[in-house]
Image (tube, rainbow, N blue to C red):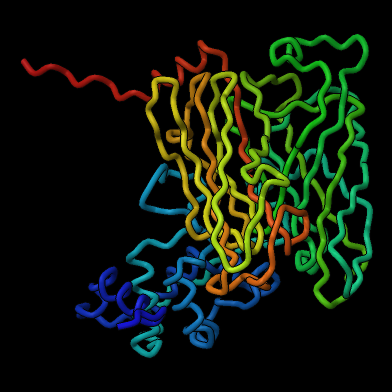
Amino acid sequence: MTITPHHWITLFVATSFPIVAGAQAPVTFTKDVAPILQAKCQECHQPGSIAPMSLITYEDARKYARRIRTRVLARVMPPWHLDKTVGIQAFKNDRSLTDGEIATLVGWVDAGTPLGSPADLPPAPTFPDPNRWQYADQFGAPDLVLRSRPYDMPARTQDKWFRPVTATGLTEERWVRAIEIKPVNPEHRKVVHHVLTLLEQREAEGVTGLAHEAHGVQRSAGLFMEWAVGKVGEIFAADAGKLMLPDSKIRWEVHMHAIGQEMKNVEVELGIYFYPKGFVPARRTVLRMFDVSRGSELDIAPNAMAMTQNFYVMQAPARLENFQPHMHMRGKALSLEAIYPDGRKELLSSVNNFQWNWHVNYVYADSAAPLLPKGTVLVFTAWHDNTAANPNNPDPNQWVGWGDRTVDEMAHVWVDVTYLNQADFEKLVAARKPAPRPIPH
């Protein structure tokens, strides 16, 4: 018998969620489904937010019930595309559904979307403005807000990369504890694919503060923050941050793609939250782009799968704060493995269901962020699917190589790396080890 996608879904439901068929209490919207939507979906699926439809009311959910069923079974929604069977599973921002929650949603749709008793409906949550500064609840308003110059994006044109420069206006050095990026106009999220900000700065003459000596900062120019749909920003660990110097500048790279509708005055803004004046964190975090595709070597044949790898040796002890794969339409999976100096191997993280229109930043929990000794080899492996079986593939008959356009391909991983000295590394490793059990008398 030929196994079709329908058979796979039926088999998946039957083997993974048997509790639905044997459940005695009927699954209803008011008692079972609404709490899940409130906790995992409605922050985005509300009027004025980034999702294409609202899931606030029963009528909303019933209208899109079949789509909900398909998306949650495929683990496309909510956007959390990490392989849950391997690697680190403790994250600060885990938005995924549990197996039980998926079973509840699927069972509700299969039962005909029953409403249930109105008395069971939980109070509607009050969501803050989805287009506000998301970290303001934690840190207050950003200490510094910078905007790119406006750009008019035609309705039909090639992809555009807009690279203006904005002065920060800083007159003293400041350490950064959090960063956000967002389009100024929510409507412009439709055309802004991603944003890079590069911090251009050099030490002012005569400035030789301890911060520079401790962290080896003399001249600096590098990646400050990367943003794409699915990512809010970055909050650095309590013991780490990024340093901004007087007279520094932000160089933007705003990647836009046409959608058949003209967008005038497209702007993005950068919100920066500082540590208190005079505070110097013990460690410095650097945003690194680990290229997996080897640039021009990426070569994907028509109607074929492709695998590429790249290797990096850690030149100093470090803590990895996150895992954020970046590919385009043919991206399928990307993994990170560590080979330790003693030869031991560990698969740290793997995204096995990559969705090119969501660039999720998987932020490790403090207790799980990988601590890597000097000499550790990081192994990045990427898979691309250039076949007709890939629903995101615009043309499986094309050869595909590396390129900036969304119809080209990439494969890299954004990782915030907090570098450590040997003493700090050993201290953090020792703190992770469980306390010895007392010997019974």
